[in-house]
Length: 450
Image (cartoon, rainbow, N blue to C red):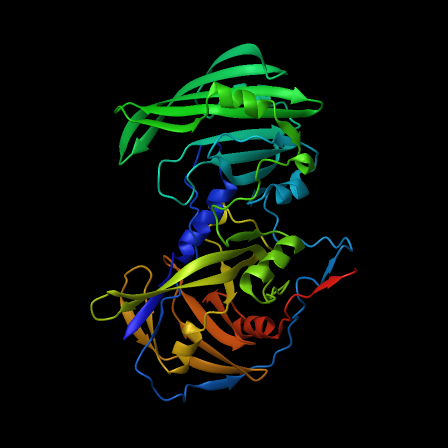
């Protein structure tokens, strides 16, 4: 007998999204690994298939989130997050709101890691943070540097006080490769607790900052932290020679020829914000996904992602790993009113809806019983699912899953060789209406005017 688990838990998904939202420059703790909820579904001894049956037919809107026409100007958006993470320069250009330049030269070994867009961050203007790393997905020591781009005054912004710490600033007018700007050295000390022990940390950052027409640019060429216990962490570092080459190579994004601006760090993972991302999601998944625009109770999609995950099967007797199976899943989080997820409402009710071609959980449920592994205690419990019939589709449901003190009801079904799973907190009413909407929702359709 065996049970399975997919990567990480629902709580960890939530934390990753919150970390993206609350991302601060200098923090490199966002995982590049595939992240998905733990389904904790297992196959057990086959049992009779006479699970309880019920048929539901309440009226509910199954309108898809949009019928997508390529080139017709349809503005299709998912969620309302003010911070967005992109894995290519092309997607950042779509959302920046202004024209900007990027380097066409990158030092040896450096590649694009990701691009963050923070709306109205500096002087009420959008800010782009572009991060470059070496040795991605290799496991060796990683070197980094990053740059900021905005129409707000970057020089004044970087000189400002951060939190309770007053920085010490040194400014030097400097011309690098024909670019006239300011070389800024910034030092600040602050206290941070680790294992309930306070540490004094000295941060040293160096920037080359300039303005080209109405756009400000900053290259963070060095950043380190020295802890009071003697540790030193170096975040960013490139040589002066490389800085000269980078600063002298700036071109508008469409004119870049030599530098590669598509990240390899995230594999098949994808953040979905609009129709371009949904089209890419279809390519990664191998099928056109579903995305109902509204669900009973006022739930609307607030976040949607594609993740490349590995399903691990374990022997129930000794917990030894039996096999690993890669898969690609799309998971969408629904919140009431599409309220943006953050630390203040991290405990709010949310519905998780995922879809992919891996049929393991569905096939396990068809055997009549499942093992449900408690995400908190790790204990495994044998559960008999209830069987619903919706438009001729078998939908298995059982209590299990959730994270922390949240208890959820899971629903699993198959349509057109795609396995769908919904996880709904027990507090949510009209659950069968919600599942009916998901089952009846059409796959998103892409049309071309060509």
